[in-house]
Length: 391
Image 1: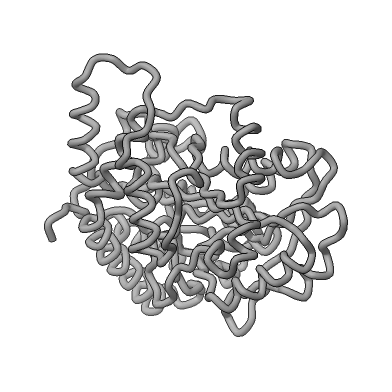
Image 2: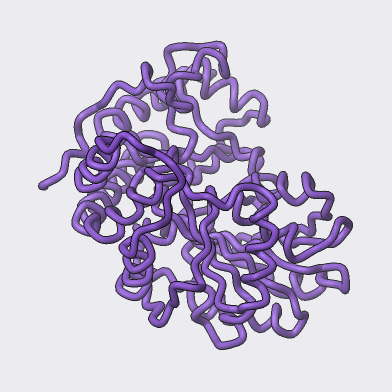
């Protein structure tokens, strides 16, 4: 391997949410944190070098994106995801994907309108909907033969005249599904029939660990292209979340101008270092990503084998996309509060409890696998020991 994913790097002195806030947020200081979705890997050296070069210039005033910022993303979407023909004018800056769907909610609906989500799902979806005075409509995922699927019949039944959009998580966080093309086709068909917009959060689009290829929702049909706002960022792919840089790809001019107008009520200026990092990542970071995916697949294999052999009562759901494992802990015989206490105080693991993700999350834990394997091994030994000590 040309890149190093094995070295454990101390982040406690650098105000890391995952590491530095441990004592303040949990009351404990001896945990292995595998919760929030950032990686314990260095960013690609090509990105680090580009940031150092820009930082060496001592003026950090208002700055516009480079040509490489847009062209890199356009070429990346074509090469990695088969979305050819993305135009520069379709791409709007947003300071993160969460900000992107918050802007979209406000741009395309009014207080009291309804927005669909598919829980268990990334919890800022619900928070942003409620925080902007809209109503949440839940279309829960269903488990069929141990596999998560969309419930299309339920979705169609719940959409009414006040329903303006669905926020789609693709790939899905936390259940780690990569939606098949035929699933997206059915979703688009319903959205076209019911005339609702699709806000497609595709921030994990590059992190594909299984066999299913990620399909951008907007590429399903011309109808999908005209009613989809696609949110993407280099932040999860290249571990750049602290640089607050994301993109809304909006082919429909009317939707694009509405988004731009709403965004202008906040800040329309990009982050200098976020823009530099995106340019370098999409133009020079592909080799690093390929090695990262190989390493993450190795971590997933280790996790599967460890659970199967040593903690077989736990159920790991298929991890097709993201680096976030979704584990059913029902067999431990606890309620949700007890399960969280067990993980923190007995297993010494700081994980994301499933209840954060809403309906369907009870008795689950989400485990971040984007760490050096030695750290993952320590975490799993902790968990095995704690489970074996249960009465």
